[in-house]
Length: 505
Image 1 (cartoon, one colour):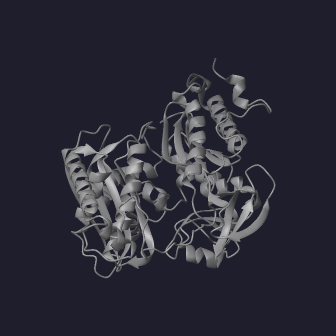
Image 2 (cartoon, helix red, strand yellow):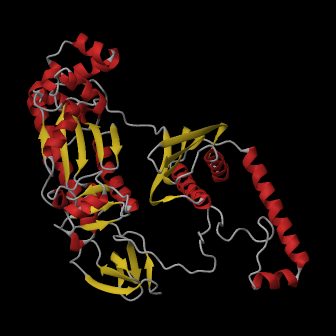
């Protein structure tokens, strides 16, 4: 056990919603809910203003709208969230090489492994605690100065207690738990606060009258081992006593890369299901390549109309990141699933990750076959001459597989055309970044009945003007998110930081 609370846990406050409030001046201090906006969407994050109405993460979006109808309901902008996260994680890595990210907005830091480590250890329990508290406060100030967001920090001698401390610090605070106070802090907390205690374990403990951590701590270890198993029972008992020897691990190697979508209406058409599977495959491969990885096992996930969830997988002899191979495997796996009745969720994933790829002979052969087929189609069209061209112009149907591809399916990279020849209206989502030729950058407040309403404002300014356009206005186009003021820059100027007084050379 450490004598100084030198493990730091950082948790950004209402991260997605706070980023939206920081980047949209008109939403400051107002309830904001970020998540899926469809009929089956769920809340990803709610601002503290929305939480006062009972809105919380993982709540169905329809229920959130009933609780807080006046909130701004926005689609997530993951690109911007990642940029802000990179800035925050860079600040953490300046403090120590041992940074263990848990998500885009949460991480552990071992301060003793960084530049302040020698001073922390030399200061002893009292001076060391004062120093780590100063480091935590400076970190929070740097985040606010850099991206205008607040963060909560917990400090303790163990990872478990540091996370408990950051929860107690929310929102926008810092809590330090001195070594020796573990039992006191944990006593009245529910057993679900223990890492590894989920609903099933909590129910097992409840059946014998254990609902608080203090009650678990007072239970003999051998009884917990008999009840939960040797490893789990001993681990739960140690954590209840405040003992946690898990180290901060700098690299948490991903075991898989996956994406999934829940649909507003169950998909019953096989063509549509295949299209959505191809689209998910593209997103999965994009993430896989962005991470510089490849994988051997392709997995699909299908949740049917009756909520039964099925998975199917297939493993290659060597890792690949080839979209052709992964798409072909995903489609092959789909044929193994009964789709009658409709599909409400689809997912595609790749596991068995590696840092390299090998030339895939199957992919090469498939490409050669596709090229040969395309060349044959071109030759047939040329040989048919003007007659075929006239028929095509008049809209005469051809046999499937002969001549032009199926109009309702153009492949994984083509737009879906459920009504060939139709020109579907552009779709604008609340919170989406846009730009207008005359009015500049802004974001979508809402759309419907052929109109779209846009508020023209940028981060770091006053609330902007609202204007309404036709959904197909040629001057309006999607845009990339604008960065938050100061993001990516180390805060400069201002009052001296507390930790600078003892900063290592």
